[in-house]
Image 1 (cartoon, one colour):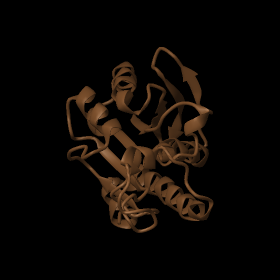
Image 2: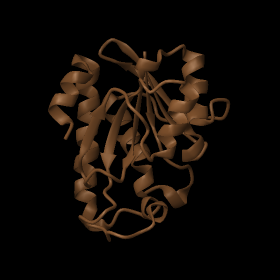
Image 3: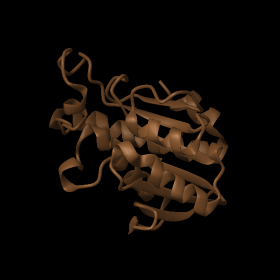
Image 4: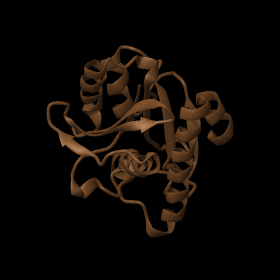
Length: 192
């Protein structure tokens, strides 16, 4: 079983923000895998979609705890389904990657991302696969000097949306490939 987690913040005011690209990606992934709609399950503190793909069970979640407490929801679902830590995959925004880039890693620190920090802390391991989606905050398409918190909570601009859609599509296809042929294959093909 794979537990795939999209990080973001609940609430209408956050829907199209950079920090919610993990939720955006999960919605597209759910459609691509043709599994059940997301349902809010308060006992897990997240929205959950369940199904099967390529002969294996899949659980997709969008924690509803707000970003900095995401790990609490992930741990509840992981324990309930008895998922191994190396079968937890996390997708989230990364301000240090150029807009539109996907980077896949099999382990490592959380860097500056508080949502991932919460996941790693709650799971007690850094051996969690992660799909980082570039939202770039430092000078390519955004001002070089800015408050990162305000930036990630700002919506994507309309002219950025084609790149965002392409990035989320690439993420979705990377997960499909990883589920079929392994994470290394996906990393080689899609990770920039």
